[in-house]
Image (cartoon, rainbow, N blue to C red; front, side, top):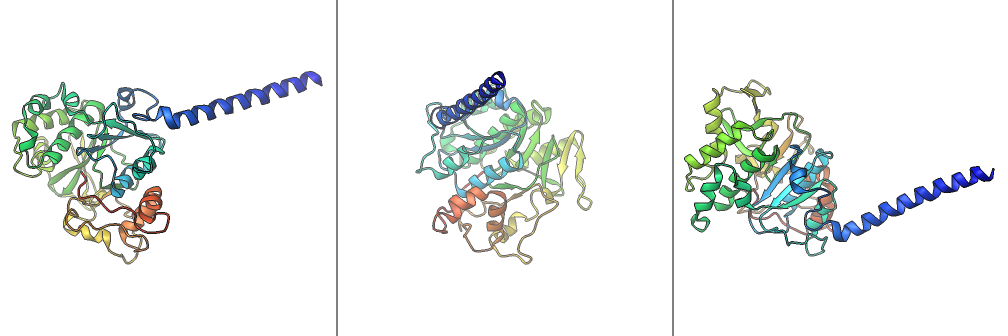
Length: 343
């Protein structure tokens, strides 16, 4: 009897010690493990898994807007077993990403287990790619669309090096994308570059980087972005019309139907900020929704708590933390507006 009691007490003691040890690690990590990247392993190791969902911020802005926060949170919710990597130009190796009341969106995203932040060091990123010579000779101060062009280049290099899925920061994820190598169609014969996915070192992306440099034209908006993807897709195959909701195949690259990401085309972007009837469409053919925040840069429409618009519904369903903290706020009012620009 005494021996059994001793064994039971030993087991209880071991369990208690394990619990206290895990608790101490968790409490210490709140203050010492998070900065700068909240990564349990090296950034290279994390990204080399080839399964990351990638977002990019090419301005120096550190506090994500509610729409950016919603995009990241919704991706983390849809892909809970995959790292969501946010590359930020304003983040350096010396930056301390601690939860702070002055950056509520950062604090919110840092609390999500599979969200990680990385500095966007373009010179290092472009090493070993066709983009390196271009980047080291370009005068970014004279570039009209530098924030966009540098983002176009960075997303190509990151996905080529590490693989995964790139998404613009105004895309709200609904359900997992089943394809490994894909481009997203905006129309029958036009591709976007707002979302795409590839395995590491895919030759299509290498060819895109070569074409980026060879046909660089900074005065033509989108020339290094959606127009580039469309050019390279046409080199590989003839693009026909989509049949109903079927996707197209171009060699080993899937060209996904416009309904997958763009059921609301850019000319109708205001529909996201209108009340629908029926009020809560589910978009069953879509993997994610692009909210076209570039089109919203002048009007700066925001998600209003209690407005019952489509955008509010999407926030409440797919990024509830963002809606609760950044939109509804403690008093139930809007606490932040959409920023003037996202990727």
